[in-house]
Length: 423
Length: 186
Ligand code: SF4
Ligand code: SF4
Image (cartoon, rainbow over the protein chains, first blue to last red):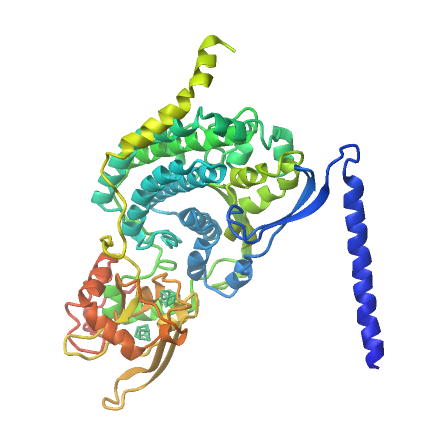
């Protein structure tokens, strides 16, 4: 009996070895035999300082050239989609903070928009403006973070300090708004959690006034720097057609010259009431994507200024009390309100049966939520279309033929965040 | 290659410009904060450690209603409600534990609590050598609440959850206005 078992296991292992061996054989056959260099498989990550999280890549190398690269995802998988099936809609908002932890506000926005679409809920005008302002501030924060780390990966240390100086100021503003700097939990279904006070408005104006000068500072350090140009020009080139076929979105797609931006295509929030341009690149290389993100920061600053100018007065939360928490004062003094409060906390609000997909232009690309509702207070199924994950699909294609030192730059150009990629 | 670009590439002009920027920053005001010695002023609405609150007469507010447990997305709270041993008409939390190793500091429990028994503070640097050290009992939360009372009140005010306090003199109870004055609730 026992020997039978062990033979079975041994047979299993042998089978697996055969499969792996044939895979390896196929890999080796793929290599170009005319170049006389060492050929080997290199394992990179998951614990590597430059992979922006826990990402493992198997690199098939021919000397220093990359023949094939296989990203191995899933090290940061936390089962957000499954957990969401056991949480009320309000409880999911803080979970979405943890998807793309560099721009939590944008995730919140994408989620609440999808639920509002299912509920067919109108959001008050002031709330729409506050949401737009905060989303654009988040875009600036994200791109500053990206610029700092991308330059750091390539070896330019000081840019990091300058971008983080500005980022700090904006995170302080987030802290006043919602009480946290990264895991914000600020947007609510039907509005936002707290109002934007006057001193924050003044601070934002002051920030935007100085921001153009700051961008010029970063550009002084990078734009014409020969090391930066050598490391970014004509690296990881992807044509518009390939980019579309791979389903890329965000600056990675726009770098190839496709002006696809959901803020323009299906305006939401207050984007139809402000003027801004969508920058597109020409060559589809890393330098173009860098340039696009710099330009997007300028445009975001422009949007924030216009929104602040037009900021209407009024409520910041919908008056549909089916979804919004009642006032604490009423809860304490009024029996019906108290019962309603209990119901909202324990059961959540019901969402009519149906399913919907809603995409939002986050700093990284199109973040979409697909929610199936069965009419109860919890989603039946929630699917997240994460831009980092989809962009990662083109990694092998974009890295093929470049040097091993470029791998880090190529990670950086997607602006990849593993929290969102692995969910 | 034109003469101009040749001169530029020989003299490293763009690198010099970058260095110039860095050097001018050496004489500007420093923005670095020397953390343990120097601390940043946190905003009033900062979502730090959660505390339990009391009424002015020292009576604990929590009525053991389980709402904070129900809304917690991280399942960090455990409440066992019971009848108060001294006042049989009143309920209280016989057992209450808040697991700060699980808590994600979302602030929902404060929104859910119907008697403002919970609030958040600017405390953030609590640490422990064991996991058990971060699982707080009600007594520990009350002690922390006594220490940070002004901060917890400031939090509720900023989050628009204050204001209900003024007429609720009956400690531990809701104050219900007469039927005729009741507005139809939310
Ligand atoms: S802050 Fe959020 S996670 Fe922490 S105990 Fe309260 S509800 Fe739970
Ligand atoms: S803290 Fe508040 S919500 Fe939680 S059990 Fe006590 S009274 Fe209820």
